[in-house]
Image (cartoon, rainbow over all chains, first blue to last red):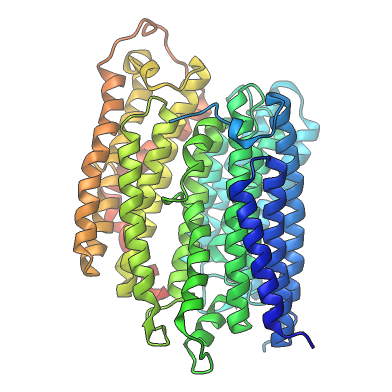
Length: 100
Length: 496
């Protein structure tokens, strides 16, 4: 059986990749995908811990996270489409109507 | 385990059930009503939420240490008072929006405000990691939509995207913290987690627990716009439609402080020692340092603002800093600190909504939200100028208004918790804060402008909402202070 540590290390790597993606990439869609990667890294950790403790709470948590992530996608993509309509660009460096 | 009895569990979620019914009602009205009748939608939403604010008192907490709905929610003093704050915030914002031309006739706007209030209300009572996460997102996701609600203003879409990207990043970090917390203990209930962390079965050293704590604090830091997670605040406050800004600044912040205090008291309690490290020491230092940085940065950056909403954004960062003083003082385990944060949030609810209410009416009439355009407001509408003055005096902490006692109780709690230096920094910051609040009052009363013969009309609904909040601010700062604070103190003692 694969030890729990292996899953946690995988989830940490994914989490770090997601966080770097958010901080370094400039395309709004890619930034958003990185956030989804972070959410899913948490899902992996939850499921792995759930197996480790031999109970279903973590699995249950994961279902809620997936549902919330779906809601977030719906809102997020709509917002990105809206900003593309006004700016013809989804580069987050170009979002600077407000300064100070 | 006791058999499930619906009627014992229902009182814990009466406001939420009411909000769901209200949301459906608003949807129905949105389908049926046409033309000028549509103002009824907003009235129903607003008055409905204010009426629901009574329910936490009618179905008052019975057993403060019991959890309901399978351990998901608690029904105690903390949840009671913060549910009232969330409901009043939602209701007053809805009433202030009814007569605005862009949002006032849109059923979906009020629907989303109600759903967001539902999230804030659940958050106040959440006692399980799953509930915390779901309620947090129920509060926040509607706010992303609301922030980008305006089609006329290009800044609005930009505000929405920025809020969304920062917000989802912060909640992902927080969620990872939750997953680790679950991993350490195998529990999702906040109270069971605390028990396990304190028990001898938990033998790990303190470092991973502290790291988890930091991840969770990042999420909270974003929600309450604490420095260094405040970058979204000015842009979102400026770009979002003003009623939305008002709601974000009050409901979202109050619910987050409620949850932060619950985490502080329940998950990492006073007595928790892991591997020889006192977790609370770490948390107190973290809260104290964040508090100092937050209020200083907020106040200093507010000094140079030209836009009134941006000014209030930095002001709200500073106010979060003051409130964190009360959170840092929690470690002494006194009811004083919980009560001071609660009182501050209650007074902040009325104060900030008052200030934003005036700005909603003002920018609706004039189409601008620059501070210099507010010149001569007292000649255009003396009542609005008076309301604005009361609001800003309260934010600045000048005696007749509630803000003075709000700050007084926070600083007092800090001194009782041996954090006198923090109280001193708070006082110094309050003095810097006074400068920019008084400048706005000066612009309103002293500066002249070419438009000052054009009166600004106030619709009756907005006038009632503003009048009510003004009276609440003054009452909380005068004869009501003792009653309300003592009530908060008694409720807080029941919690500890």
